[in-house]
Image (cartoon, rainbow, N blue to C red):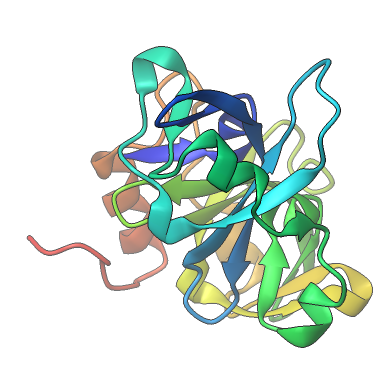
Length: 202
């Protein structure tokens, strides 16, 4: 299932023995876009620190409860490494914060074309599939979507991502309707517009 990261950040986190906090962020690998870690925040009114848990402990989301389930106890979560960890991103330059990347500029082959408004997560494999792009500077009110394989690089130094597409191709892409969301028909139209292969079979 595809889910917006901004919406997921409103979710609670459930351990085996009860709620332990709420989703604060995700850390993903720039090369694969796989989510490597979940950042768990304490939630309103709680004083303990933010912690990192590996994505391997994530279980099937409890959509009806607006919560993510982790295969840990509350004690195990509380003993997890603190975030931000000392030197974490310096130690792995390919590891990025999803919350930090939201807001980065989009640099097409021939110039800037907007900013990342959200990241879209596939919870089947805990991988980021798309970046939702706000192109208001060019097309007021229009939001388009880019598949992450089309992103060549994330430039942390100047808060940009480089995309192997032209401005015109991005601006003329299918517009994302928030009332309908991102379904398979939209995905097909998007990939066909940019003449890119599907990531799914069939």
